[in-house]
Image 1: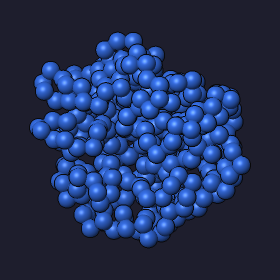
Image 2 (image 1 turned 90 degrees about the vertical axis):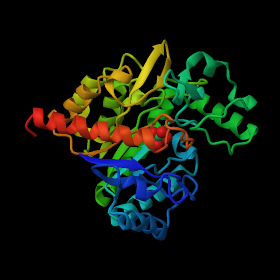
Image 3 (image 1 turned 180 degrees about the vertical axis):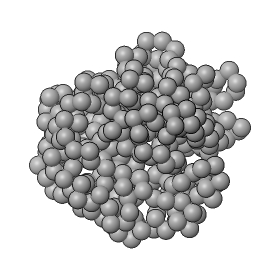
Image 4 (image 1 turned 120 degrees about the vertical axis):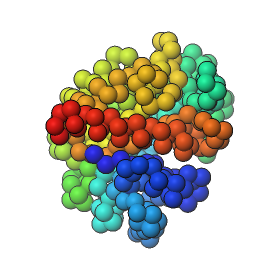
Length: 347
Ligand code: DNO
């Protein structure tokens, strides 16, 4: 496996010279941030990220994300043009040495939390989710101020968008995902890129919006829609594991060959559809992190791994979920788990 760290570009307070000091770190996960979803990334922008990484002894082989515009998810009239642009991005990224692209197919919202600074017993603070609080929010009333939320919509645009998804429904979204994959996976194959869809976070529908990348049967359906290794998964334990019916060790074992990127973080489940983000170790939360890593290693997983959301510790006040210290601790812990599993299994 290759250990990586997400980097949000030159404005990221977590700088590349800090990232490179994390033991066994091989590369960064990044993206071009100044082009709207649906647009084409310039070769210069891509080359610039690659050069910044290389100047710090780091690789740039994973993009998170090339965002899928709402028009593609909705199957609107410009979906075809945007999909062509998407394929063009893959071509350019492949040429620049990128090997894996993470993306998601969540309508309107990306990841959602109800609290951004939940104080924990040790004084750290972290992101938390409580379904009751989320249900009480009305996205149309401007109640939302959440990390995965694109605040650039006007109320009218948002109302219209949500309405379109209500009409589309789950099966409509599946259809549009299939149309997208049938065009994009062959382009990815040609570019030498493995696509890795990120699961929905949390993995259930919200505000009446369909969410489909959620559990084993749905992941199977998605992978068989285009049965090609380039059509793969981002195995995000924190997202999938929020649904207690998802057995992460079993899923890691079952999907290993199609997992190209793993976001390995832990959460503490505190009730029905209620959880807090915690430190990465198994003992800090609800998941068997060693069991997950061992299952991946056993199946010969050789993709990219990154620590995921970290708590804010040691007085840090950074980008929500993406500070330095707790993610660095997570990275070191994950490196340890992989070393142990590889030795145990003779890999
Ligand atoms: C949250 C991230 C997600 C992820 C996208 C992938 O921290 O894991 O925002 O990057 O869903 O497209």
